[in-house]
Image (cartoon, rainbow, N blue to C red; front, side, top):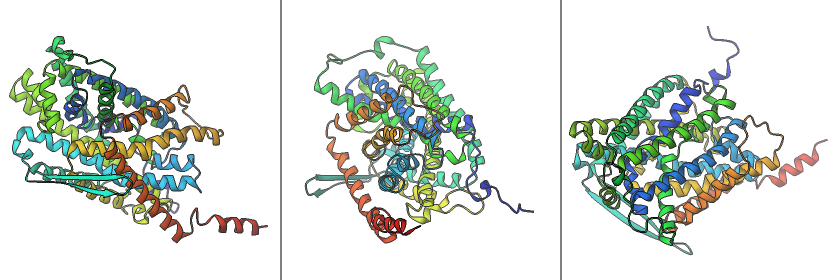
Length: 494
């Protein structure tokens, strides 16, 4: 017989994840396919193994911003993560309402882009088994002239690998269409697969290490010229993409046990562990596969399955085939974790009435936001038609401008405006991490060649988001259109 007084779990989400599950989800989200397929892209950005500086700088940036997210996640634990933080930072009834809406609006683009890059990367590794997956059937590049801004460039490509990526999107939605407790157990299984793959790569590299090949720097590799810094900016953009996911646990605040402690712990632990694994793995690969071969793959944006080539050099074809399968599993684990976390963000905003109300619907049996999950999967499938390099660049720039910068600055604003807010975890060396994170984000945005291309994407999304918000606010008499009426009502009350 059902209880006459249902618990919160019966009406909403379930707190079914402990520290181990949360850390596992974060790590598989961070690792994914990124480090396995983006190494040639980072090398092509800097022109040699000095590209390791990009991963080191990316790790430091992740730690700085991770401290920001850890403080906010412990102080404001709830589904939605950055949506909740931005709303509180800038005022839940004024600017915070607009800025948090803009965050959800950009998530409608950046979250599917992030998922799509995982699916595209998975299909890219599958091309090691079936090279015909990289055969281009059709491609098109278009440019739309925008007054005062220049050309907005958009390109798409159709290959058999595109179809594989789309299928993976929908298969992931199918797997996530169930209770969070089942999802938590599945995430731990995927974590063991991810750690086993990286452990094997590191062991193979250490046992066949060639220092002369690993540190074969080209002439002038460390000359502090304009070329060096623009290359570093491009490398950091890719490295930032590889490290992202450390904040994923903050999106699941309503589903984590003891979130005030477990969110900061899972977040920082996953950053430190993944940073160490990345650096070890990249050095090991450079010690076996000559970087000039990977450089050519990065420039052509094909044959990016560098780990398969690495294992083929070390153990032979059987190992290459096996590790390719493991990387595919790892890529799928990341897509799984990303779709899980991001599906909760529009749900949280819709529950507040600050996004389209359909996203607030929860499955009547399994208690998860099924409309949000389905919409995310469909849009991600559409983005699978983009080239990997273009999808990564657009994703990073959009999110830096419309999420991470305003959040890092907002963490300082919140300290000033809400000093009484309980903070179970406090940012170390405050406010230095927030300032360094902001400086690093600005360097990535403007320290790259052709930085204007992706910035235009972010500007268009920002402008359309503001317009949509103002229309919705006008129709529902929300801020800023309700300010006068609210004031009049307040003054009329005794």
